[in-house]
Image (cartoon, rainbow, N blue to C red; front, side):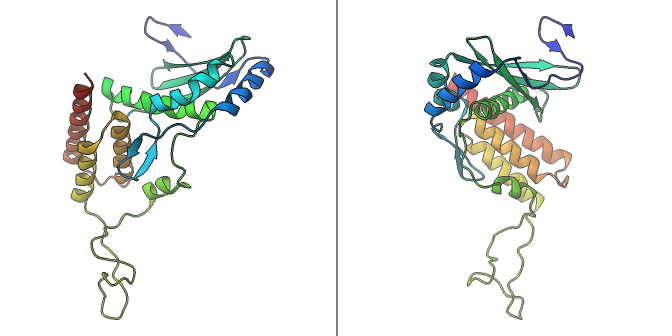
Length: 239
């Protein structure tokens, strides 16, 4: 393990773990979870039209129940030569602890890219560790849609009055959305994003859309510029 002034370089990567004894922390966490309510969902994913709690709202849901039971949470980043990890540790006043590790993989290797990815990781890791509900439960539909064939919905319905017929009574299958249409959807999402969590959600959608490598180099540059513009806009508004 090599120590520097900026981070600890792990080789091999850090692992999840716990203290030798966990009786006191387990009891305290059970008491805290009895008081924890679902986080307020004040943010909207513009693509899946679902509500979710941002990082501040997740912390607001857990802070008092945790601290009143002698529990504290730290979220530190550690790096090795190739990867960054978020280490979430729940600590009890007895000295007992448990921790989890989340691999952080930003889409872009600049400070903004890492910042967005870390914020996203902190929200999910903290909510999972403490037991906070932070998103609408869509039974996996969002993840399924990311892998399902995408079709346009411009007038083609399965047998509806608005659907077009192929001449034998069967409804036509909608043509797949073009690459330009996909790029336009993502750029529009960045333009409408109200906070950095929504920017991150748009970026995740773009990754799903590009799973078949449909985006050209120019497309990726346009999307990157749109994401940077959105981040700059939001940070300027917050300043």
